Length: 405
Image (cartoon, rainbow, N blue to C red; front, side, top):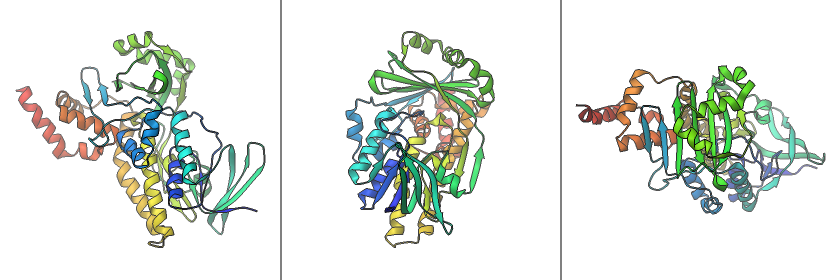
């Protein structure tokens, strides 16, 4: 006979475990299922920008992360060739970011959910999202041993990524769709010191970034336009190294380093989905997804978890009807992330910036306040809409005039 939970969370990574943890801390009976066992890895840019770091601090988990030896990142640099912009990504309250391996971060989050009282079941493949009378009511699946799994809940939360079975079952409205724009490839290196910096290099139709992670290693992630995917996949390693060689100074550092991993690749579509309906909710990449070039996924997942749980609490406490509370979650999510979504998709096209943008970059370079603002915009600390607002751009351009005259 199936148990009945207040919530079943499908997916236990950066959206699912925080959602389960926060619900369990409020006293709800929560089940979390995932096909993986933890610790386990997944392809990811895995930058946790300062806004995400602030969430870990609120949850009492930041000290656990820092105790793993993950190095802090206090400076982001954007090298456009003739111009380099460098600044601080955060705020005085949350000044740094981290780039933790998912083997460590995800396990930390799963453990925190379990400590909060959520029931965690690993190695469970969910095969069916159960529906009755147009409402989601539970899950059916199997364990690693083949044992059947059948559970019911008041609410099923899809935190199962862009290929979400929950979303596939309920078929929510999709909007703002864009096709894959960038083919991204990842590798890890030892002996490639970063000195607390997250470095990004932009060249015509190419881009790459590097960040320090656990065990003294450095993550490199690079990309080329998706339209080149089929041609370039015939020699991924050769084309990978050609991109790094576009920046000779960085390539010299790579020659002194050792690659510690295979080169892994991925590309993603860009979309929004309506994130709620009768008996179901979507959080993280299952609700909206965008290219990894701005590395916003983990921070967005943390924000979704907090906002979603607040809306669920409103509903379950009787303060507001479910549809009203979740409609606000939906609206607030879209209002917050849409400017970054559009900015990210524009960046992922890897097209040379138009002359007006090149002028702005020239005005930003050397103006530390403006460089910090640019970096914070890329980190998600401030919105692209705010940074590119005419008033702010006007101030940056005006400040550059004395230097030009």
